[in-house]
Image (cartoon, rainbow, N blue to C red; front, side, top):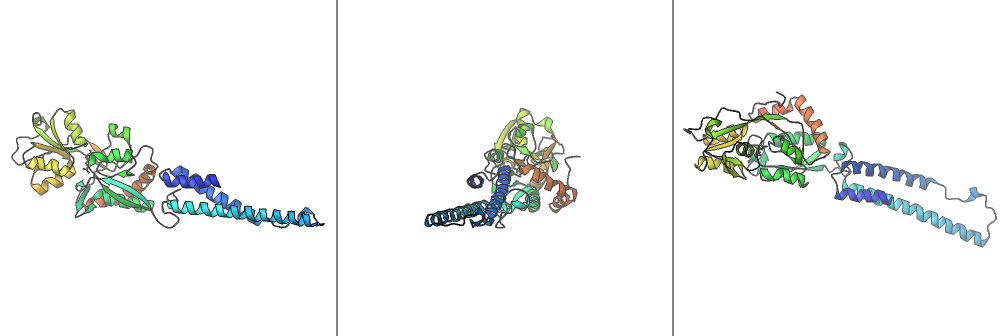
Length: 325
Ligand code: ARG
């Protein structure tokens, strides 16, 4: 019982370890059952064939009875204490158990950088876009509740590694380097990098980028691409600032993912060059070994198959491009 209680309290501390919770969950019922059986054992000593009762004998019997009552109540007490511990921690042993005993849903902390329309952007103070909608559909399937954290793009993966966030949903491209630091869901979209310039710019394609100053968002695949190609790069924590560097003339070009480029360039009447420089599957990022990957993949697969994902893209006026295409 005590070891099961310990498992229960450890759950409070390490609530992401689903396998532990499965063990604790089973212990709970095992011990409740044992307590029940113990309660059903008759109290009487008659079956031992004791018929002659001296005072001494009666006293002994009384003591034994007291002992029995004591152990039964101890058993019950520990069982109840364990139930309470488990209830307080919330049960997480399977999909249904994402809702705790008291009906509270398991929280899923999602990190994003809402400077990337149509995938995530701010509507007032609310984070909206394709990914918040998609994550919500996934959370609904898993019986979880989303908690959004707004951060700079380059702190999403380190935050996931440090287990500050459960998921990264930020138009994150799967790359071999990132795969060393985190696990990814299956991809759900295919994007590419494009060049954005001011109207009338002499830059007409990537061949013209040499010797120019290029604005990018810090920690993105755009930054990686430009650095790998030896361009002179100006990096900004926010994608909006990278764009502003172009409009203000600090940078000659801005390299960014195609859908964000189309959306943000239209607002400022910038020119998006028609050249896909990379091919980038987007996926959700998780800590290495996270048990959430499988759960999210199952939900995502259903949403891809029943057309929900495509519909979400349509709602945000975006043509859906399958990563399998
Ligand atoms: N797809 C690119 C990457 O993974 C850019 C993502 C930027 N996302 C954002 N929410 N600002 O690096």
